[in-house]
Image 1 (cartoon, rainbow, N blue to C red):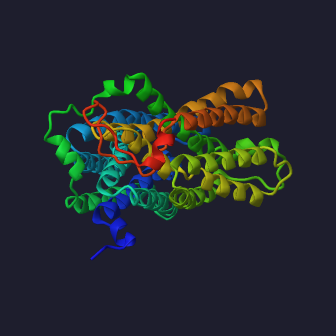
Image 2 (tube, rainbow, N blue to C red; image 1 turned 180 degrees about the horizontal axis):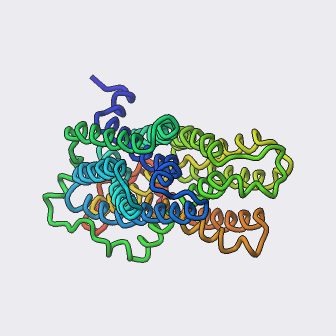
Length: 424
């Protein structure tokens, strides 16, 4: 009896992967929510010291994610996707639990670094496993479900951070991770990877990414995602500072901007995935969301005299437009062969996340030489221009057969309708 599409998508692998990304986003968001309370508990009270320590903690966590992306990605190709899922979940769960008992800043920094390393492995390994396990017509919807549920983890973290003490919130995050680890014991690698594992093909070879054509595809996948973190790091997190020159009727707060933006991100992840399926194109869906986000950014930075409600509406809409995360990670996984797919799918999202540090630093550097509005428009213009160029250079991968290698031993099989696109 033929299964319905709903039944084909809601497999244990997809459900557990979605829950994994939920916990992943819960932890990433939780740090931002409890940051001030946790630092006050460590005796840090001055605004200047909070900024300095807060930035250091953020950089330690992001540094861990950048290094972890490489480590888990290569390990996923060499040892298996499920190995990464087990080890990474255990690492960030224990780091969260120990976070609840820190008494010194250096302990906090070390644990945020370890948590960052652990968090780096979840999404890429999960998307790779799901993409290889489902047929080409269903995998886009499956990864959309994973990303959408993941973004609701951010909202739950905001609520937990608001109603629980900072150390209790970390304990909740750690316990959720350990519960997920127990559920993950029933997950296995895809048949596609198992077949490759018993061959003589070298897996997780980073040198493959330095070949000119692959390097362009890889860099393009990263650049296409950078506007997401421009929107969240500048237009949402720094909303009070960014709108200070717009003479708003009522000032906005970063917390509210992030709440509305997070809701938009969840909606956008679902909408971008469905649009990609309807258009039968990853590139067209991403292009539509990028173009709409660029338009909204220009409106945002010209909203002189607007109300705070209008800015929050724009944050929601910008979050929705930045919600092409699911389609982006799926596209990155589909660009490369099975022997290096986990490396790409794990490192790309973490390098995109790391771009937030570059964007924020660039804003601080150029702000003294321009107005805030001019600085945002300049950085935003560069970010979006590079994203559109990168999108043009990427391959269309909708419906692509993923059973191929980068070492040239097995060629990619594509449907006739995609041949013109793949030739670009």
